[in-house]
Length: 141
Ligand SMILES: CC(C)(COP(=O)(O)OP(=O)(O)OC[C@H]1O[C@@H](n2cnc3c(N)ncnc32)[C@H](O)[C@@H]1OP(=O)(O)O)[C@@H](O)C(=O)NCCC(=O)NCCS
Image (cartoon, helix red, strand yellow):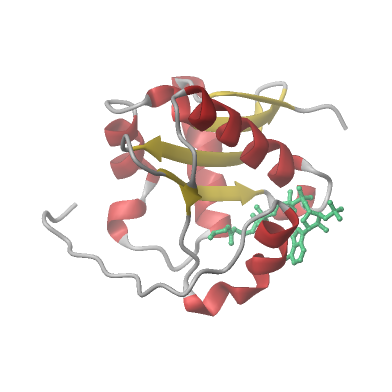
């Protein structure tokens, strides 16, 4: 299979929307593609990447650099295309783009019910750190 990792463009919307619905079926409303993609396109839009085969979206990753840490989220690959190296290619490209901005350390969060994904991240060089994750919703989607 030949795929490439490219910066998200508007013609990828339907593919990313379908991918996220499949990969994150119980997602919060504010994570929906129609909400989060327009916001991402306002801030570091070249850190929203997609894996494509022709026009077909196979995977996605979103990253951000706040000047101190890099963050990676929304990494997903179509179920039909998993375990073929797409996820690894996505995370590596996101890492390269973060590094180019001066980022030296990347953080990410995994929901407790998704421990299965830890093997993927460990394979990519990530380590589990003792941290308590907190958040505050300051605006409704
Ligand atoms: C996580 C995910 C993106 C991985 O994508 P993928 O394209 O299947 O991953 P790759 O094929 O690039 O795998 C890279 C390496 O990780 C390993 N790996 C992948 N998924 C794994 C898993 N669930 N458990 C253990 N190892 C895993 C692969 O075996 C491979 O190892 P290798 O280099 O020794 O061959 C994909 O499983 C997915 O979309 N999951 C649902 C969405 C999700 O939970 N995202 C994370 C939110 S925190």
